[in-house]
Length: 115
Length: 155
Image (cartoon, rainbow over all chains, first blue to last red; front, side, top):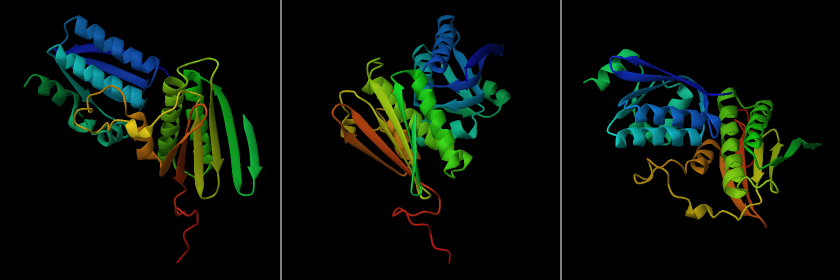
């Protein structure tokens, strides 16, 4: 049920591997704190890997939007990687599919940051 | 939990505290009851999310985590429909005042998508002002049943 986040560096891009549920409460807080910490540390290119995220509720969607705007306001870029069908459908219904840069291959995603 | 079986209908009702644990409990109950009612995994997942969102609204925006207030979640399952009501004891909600989360000026807002998702996932929803509180009723039709509750005739 809990959400986990771990980050790694590849070619100047910070990849955050997320797993579990991003929902109101713990999941949303883990995502918020992780992105906030990375921004504070000066990371500007952040790729959220949602491949192992099993579930997102409206609060989790809000947290993704908030992460996107806060990174952008700090002069950085945030992209999403490996959406499951459920998460993809949610972002489509909420029209956020057009807001986020969504990638389905890690190497291409890294390339998209460094273009 | 109260449970009763009437003619062709099963009713279950939960009276829950205003807490996040209640949200998870309501969601889990919705997933189990939806599956038992004949909905497939995807549909059960959508119904469970609608119930989760309605319960979050009741706990957060309705009861505001007030430990003296309860959330009531009721399920009524018939061969044709699953009807779910979530009631809080809060100050009330006017659904007409809810902003459209798809409007360009709202797209990047952090909140305001819960009821929109409920509308997207359920077939019918309605709000009722209680004294005190709000009750949201959500209906999902079992596939093959029309909106008058009749099974489609075999041709």
